[in-house]
Length: 180
Image (tube, rainbow, N blue to C red; front, side):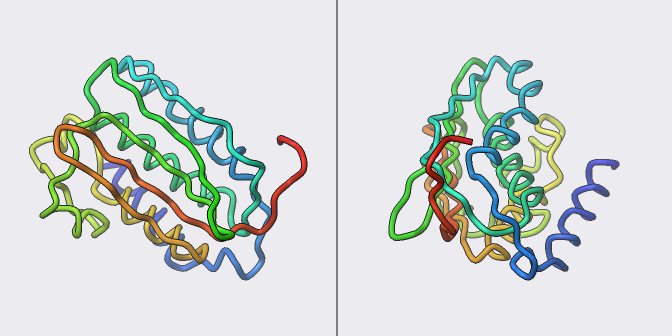
């Protein structure tokens, strides 16, 4: 219940905010490393290795905490929906002044018929797994709102019994000259 209340508060804050009104420069590398650190215990408990290919030195404009929360939600989902002793990979790609943050798992995948609904509030692909994964059904909705509020989008590629790759695409503010 505590998790549900916290997720509702997080979603409400994201919906009511405008991170581009008084934006900060945010290092994508920092955001990803922080999100991975927040997921360390759950990945370790399930024997899931989280691999991160260091990014290009990308800065975006927005709210650092919201971006960490969005990436954290994607990594946590990847861990929760993957079999034990598998791998979750995080990488970045730059294309046309947009950075894509990709979170890929080797999990159960999402059927094509379900993919259009997974970003809806409280939607669960498999409600029977709710107790196992501990999710609230709000995580992907939060991810979608954070991406949209930052002038970006979230996309999904998934095949059942193969895995899923979620991508948050954000406009690049600048490239830094050194690693942060």
